[in-house]
Image 1 (cartoon, one colour):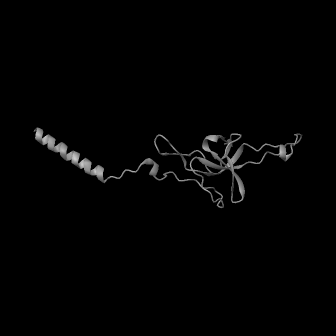
Image 2: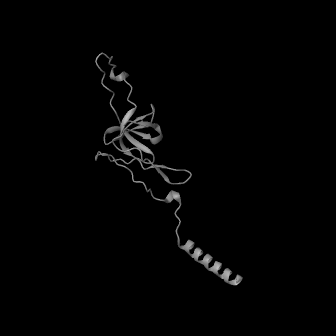
Image 3: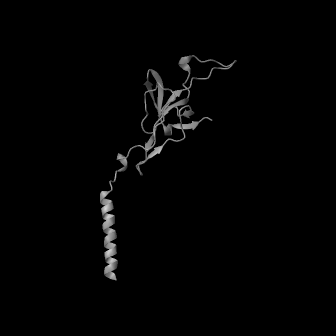
Length: 141
């Protein structure tokens, strides 16, 4: 009976070994992105952000109401709010190697970001702001 059991175990081990030898294992850093990027609703934007980058168009400063002091343009600070134009696929998780998708932002959302967030980029002759997802601290309803 021990010989029969040993033979069954050997057969199972050989089958498993054959399966493992024919299966190709792709390391996480070589796996393709599974999350599609979201392009802008503007068809003229020829730009796809990488990683966890989000492309924003700054909102213009609000017009002063009657009775308020109007500052000259050179003294006005830019708004810390903008409209999402394009969203990257997300950042790669260092531990798992998988892409952590940006699911809560989509083109057209109005977001608020940190004072010195991101970098100014010019795409198709227009000025945009490229920020990381972590630099966005709120979304307006």
